[in-house]
Image 1 (tube, rainbow, N blue to C red):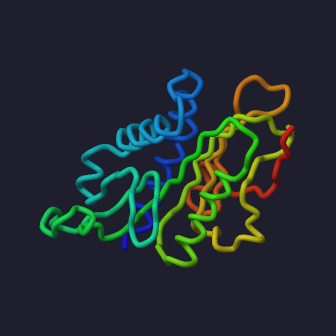
Image 2 (spheres, one colour):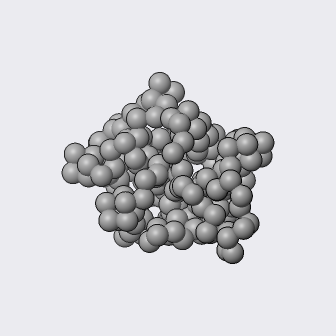
Length: 204
């Protein structure tokens, strides 16, 4: 298992990708649907971590990843010391460092977002996959102002504590620009990004 330093560095890169790179892409109209969000996230995360860092630490970034019941839009994994010697590359995955589920919707339905939350809950509670988990949600509807959007009530969802981070993009009433936030329950890099907030906004 990796040291906390590796987890903190990967976590910091993911949060910065969301707050800086994905937000910029959105404002520049570079994100059309969920697939372009995945592509952009892959590009920015690989660029921020750097190929030397990834190779030196046996890390790789994959999209549309399936492993032990987990189906993730994007993952950061550790490969074994000699990848490519065990048939399919998936057999060389020694550890999942981070798994990211993404949604980009413009309608009022909660169902696609709640479905991703349930996927992560299953990965943690039922499949027992030890990793950092991220919910990267862009929801193009208006929410009430003066509170922080959170999809997870941490008091009712103890499985998320120490594991899950919400990456939220949404709009608030009477504000033109979107809000881009990190709501973190994993306890990493709190001095930079802060911790979790359990207040849920209501849609307009």
